Length: 181
Image (cartoon, rainbow, N blue to C red; front, top):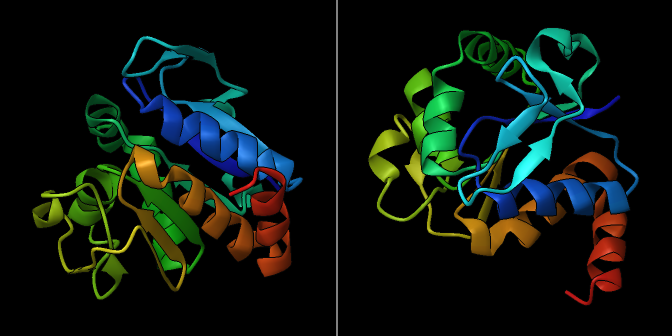
């Protein structure tokens, strides 16, 4: 089953592309999901990606994890998407896996109550948005079904934590070794 990495206008390119790349190196099926109703999505630094599918065509019953990259405007657009909010609630309420980096934990997950009772991390000085969470300063925090990370500079360990969560420590170590991390 694939993981779905969501692309909203203004996403942080490093946090999306690096995660896609490293997960595919680990032979994890990653599908990028556009929230725009069309496949082309532009990141916060003007890099345009062509998503694999639009949200309306995504089949969440056959998805192992929802992944949310950061980016200020990108996270605002993620948070504003009613369909994605419904899927995030569903995943959280059934213990399915969610990973979010940078502003996404505080702008998207926190206001939905998804971090309630969890340890989590996010972009520095955005802890206020992580309602109900115990904020941590670690680069990556895994608490049950939720993986969070701080920013573009922590994207490699974030991706490796996702790989470890989905395929085990050996797979994560294998990818880390191949990229000389």
